[in-house]
Length: 114
Length: 114
Image 1 (spheres, chains in turn brown, red):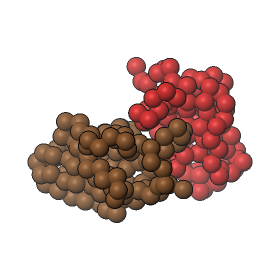
Image 2: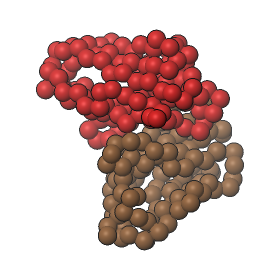
Image 3: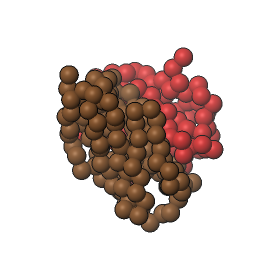
């Protein structure tokens, strides 16, 4: 069974700093997808970024980028120039190719301090 | 227009009651899901329907019964509510071709059983 581990329950950084959230996963599959979701206090789940396992190039979306290390089964999220609106729970997630369900990690609560 | 809408957003009820949560998506997706987020923010899949057919049924008590009248709707009925059912329930949807792009989530229903 696949598992997703986020080792940082909570983090705080100053506004405008760069922060990296860690995620590791365990799978025997070779083809899969990885996601980072953001859940702000509004409770809405928002897709931040996705990565296809067969692509070596790290995904980027504006201030958000990932460091995907397939051999190490690591998928960290970097937020550059952090903003107050980035304050949220961040969930790392995994989906096997051809599967129907996304498996989530337990989340990292990120506080951006003014 | 809301892509995935859930009603109600908040639900407070007594133990032993029966309640339903409704979900509708206007994205034209063919797969819908129910996830449960517990008090520690852990998200776990409960059910998945594809074109009105149940395809995922995780280990969920029989008191929980999903119903999909058509591919745009997925409702969750809960019988004999217990204190441990208190959680946020998220509906989500995806397209079979393109589900690897992640789900679109509703804004969640906070269920409180007293």
